[in-house]
Image 1 (cartoon, rainbow, N blue to C red):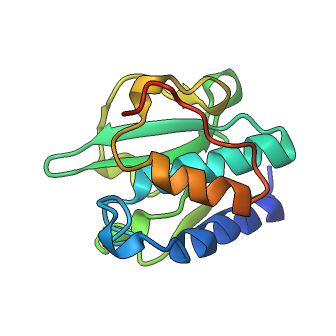
Image 2 (cartoon, one colour):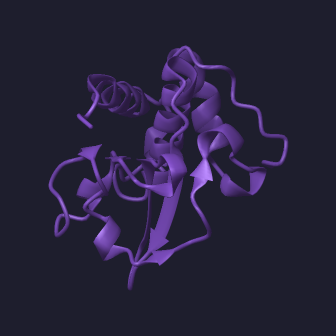
Length: 155
């Protein structure tokens, strides 16, 4: 399987839009981008790929000795065939640039402990989101041409 050009385009489009978020400097998840921004960024890229290309990527959250990290995997029948890790470069010992490609993210071997199972973009539960993400998604999704973010479980 070859990496698809639209994966890179999706990542770039979302990351550029996140960079324009007006509250970025005060938002706990975006103020130190890419550090601490992995779940917000991964969720937004996953929604983009689901709505624009019908691809149901999964969010994977793993932990290591000091940090946790989240990225996207395309894993039909539970066999990872591709990954998008837009913020892996927050860990310079792992990578100096985002990862979009076939196989596992370079972060996979550095974060050995799976935190729950992978969560498909088509069925992300309310508990997966955390505070201060609603304002990002409510601003970001219309600018990306995505359906509005709705999650009544968020405060």
